[in-house]
Image 1 (tube, rainbow, N blue to C red):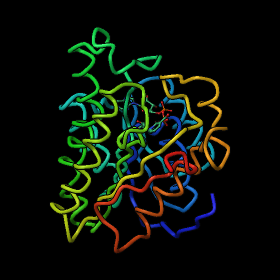
Image 2 (cartoon, rainbow, N blue to C red):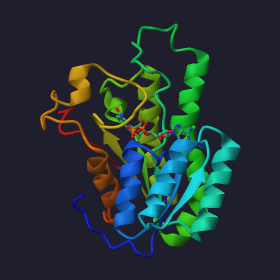
Image 3 (cartoon, rainbow, N blue to C red):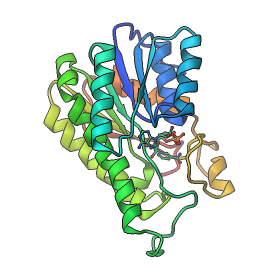
Image 4 (cartoon, rainbow, N blue to C red):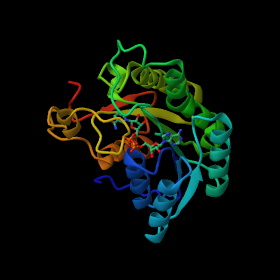
Amino acid sequence: MQANYDLQQKKVLVTGGASGIGLGTVEAFLQCGAQVAVNDLAGPKLDQTIERLQDQGYSVTSAPGDVGNAQSAQDMVDNAILQLGGLDYLVNNAATPGTPKPIAADDFEQQTEAFWQQLISVNLIGPYRCIKAAAGALRNAKGAIVNTTSIAAFGGGGSSAVYSATKAGLVILTKEWARALAPSVRVNAIAPGIVDSDWQCKFDQATEGGETCPLGRKGSPEDYAESILFLCASAGYITGQTLIVDGGLSI
Ligand SMILES: NC(=O)c1ccc[n+]([C@@H]2O[C@H](COP(=O)([O-])OP(=O)(O)OC[C@H]3O[C@@H](n4cnc5c(N)ncnc54)[C@H](O)[C@@H]3O)[C@@H](O)[C@H]2O)c1
C-alpha cells in the first residue's frame, strides 16, 4: 500500500475483517501502527487470521459476531470498544450476496422473502447496528466511519437486484449518518468494482478477471484499503460521500 499514516494511537473496528477488502484494511491499519479489532463470523477463518497477525507481532484482537443479528452486533461492538479502550474508526465492511451465482432481476422466484430479509439484515441493518453501538465512542474520539457499498448501488450489475438495493440504501444512509453525526464524526463510503477476494458470488470469467475495466485488472484488497484509510485518517473536510473505486469500470 502507498499510503503511510502514523496511526499509533488509533483504535479501529473492521467488520468482515477476516477476508478480502476487510482483511486488506485490517493489515493496512496495522502497518500504520493502529490497534485493530477484527470482526467476522465466529469460526476458524477468524481464529486463523487473528493467530497469524498476532504471530507477526501486531496489536490485534478478535471481535467475533454476526452483524445480521441485533444482539450479536451490539455485544460485538461493545466488547471491541471495551478491549480497545475506545474507538476512532469504524469500517462497516461485512456483507453477503446470499447467492453463489448472480440472480437475474426478472427471476422473482429466486428472490424469496427469506433472501430479501437476509440481505437487508446483514448489508443494510448491519451497518446501522454497528453505528448505533459505536456512536458514543466515535463522538468522544471525533472519529470517522467508512461503509463499503458497491458500484451495484449505481446500477452497476451486482449479484442481484436485492443486493444492489441494499448497497444503494447504504449510499443514502451514509449521507443521513454524516449529517446526523456531524460535526464530530465524518461518515463516508467506498463503492468497489471488481474485487480480488473470496466473495461468495462468482461472476463470469471476463468480469472476474477485470479485463473489461479501463485499468485492465481487478482491484486488490490493498487498492480498496488505501481508499478506506484515506477516508478515515485524512480527508478531514469530506463527509457524506461515496468514493467510487473501480478502475474506471463505471465510466
Ligand atoms: N467482491 C465483490 O465483487 C464486491 C464488489 C463490490 C462491493 N463489495 C463489497 O465489499 C465488501 C467486502 O467484500 P469482499 O469482496 O472482500 O468479500 P469477502 O467474502 O472476501 O469478505 C466478506 C467478509 O464478510 C464476512 N461476513 C459475511 N457476513 C457477515 C456477518 N453477518 N457478520 C460478520 N461478518 C460477515 C465474511 O465471512 C467475509 O469474511 C462487502 O461489503 C461487499 O458487499 C464486494
